[in-house]
Length: 103
Image 1: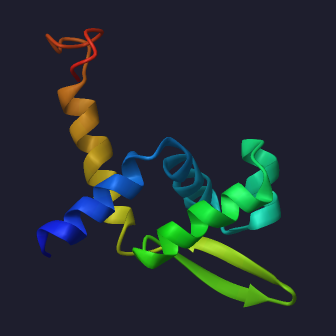
Image 2 (image 1 turned 90 degrees about the horizontal axis):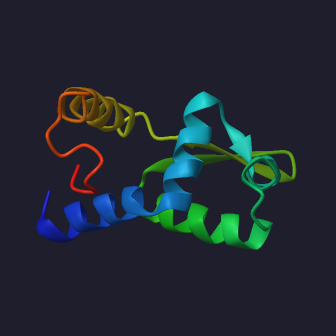
């Protein structure tokens, strides 16, 4: 993976709205309408974020009737679990940086 690919990957995950979308899709696949309602964001904004996530292959989409259903790419899940494990160990209660905006 080259530097630009890493940058895009982390930039997408670093965007608060896109990260919220990914976490919703980790629960179960959803349509734009469902994501919009659950996050309280306009459908056009959700569609914009989904397009960016799809370009980096962080999510998949499947046509179901007239709508598209989005899900998290299976290759992304291990990276998210690794990040959660790191956060649990790094940002534990005994972390010297906790609450200082550095962790």
